[in-house]
Picture 1: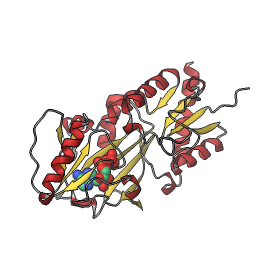
Picture 2 (picture 1 turned 90 degrees about the vertical axis):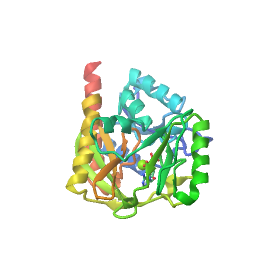
Picture 3 (picture 1 turned 180 degrees about the horizontal axis):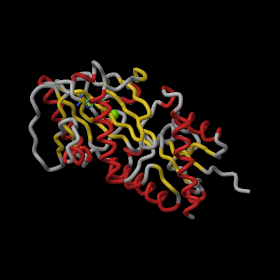
Picture 4 (picture 1 turned 60 degrees about the vertical axis):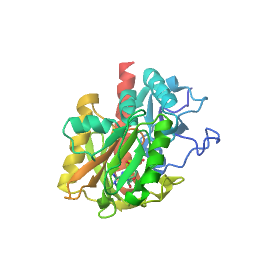
Length: 304
Ligand SMILES: Nc1ncnc2c1ncn2[C@@H]1O[C@H](COP(=O)(O)OP(=O)(O)O)[C@@H](O)[C@H]1O
Ligand SMILES: [Mg+2]
């Protein structure tokens, strides 16, 4: 009898040189595996790039902590398309492809969703630095990689940061620095199975003039469970619903917001690939996500 997982939770290796079984620690996935097992499902965490995994033998593959996707996006999207063809990928490959490159913020802005004002610089274009403090980051990134905050005294550093990213062929984003990231902080609103689940407040990570730092994701501070204002909840819902209108229902999504100078929430990121969901901060969330994945498995089986 086949005793492989019915539902695989996809993560990544602890380091590029690590064995595929040596997974990057992910407390969300541990809670999710436990919740699936509590429902009687065979569930296991696997590395997305593990050559030993037979994806077609798994009913549902849930993307969770594939955090090195941004280091090799083309390979990652090939994997996602393949898994989407031979199994049920959650979220689906089309959603992942759209969400991997933050030019999607321009799509959302075009549909009226309030997003952080962003200038996208592409290789070959000329640019001028904005006045005041601003942030430079690549359009394909996560965990604050290659992201830095500058002000007028750091113009030369900012220029060379932009040039370095463009020379690597990356699209560069330049945004005004939003000081509300320090107080009240960034708000992450989590939706599971199309419904508001919970929200978390995060502390700031960027220091003016510090430039790009090593392993920035380790500096991210989650300040704890938070209650979004009605405006924050509305904007987050608006962003999530806009994506669902295009791609269909999403099993999970996280919308990150920072307030502008007038206090209006702006979308800084819609995370549909591998958002950290802070499941430990919301007692019912692991079971809700497990039951949504369970339904995906039942649907997959009845379709085959
Ligand atoms: N425009 C901005 N104003 C203030 N802080 C920012 C801004 N852009 C990014 N940051 C900080 O950098 C972090 C990482 O940037 P983000 O856009 O969320 O990219 P990612 O999380 O995909 O690396 C944010 O969580 C926030 O702390
Ligand atoms: Mg972010």
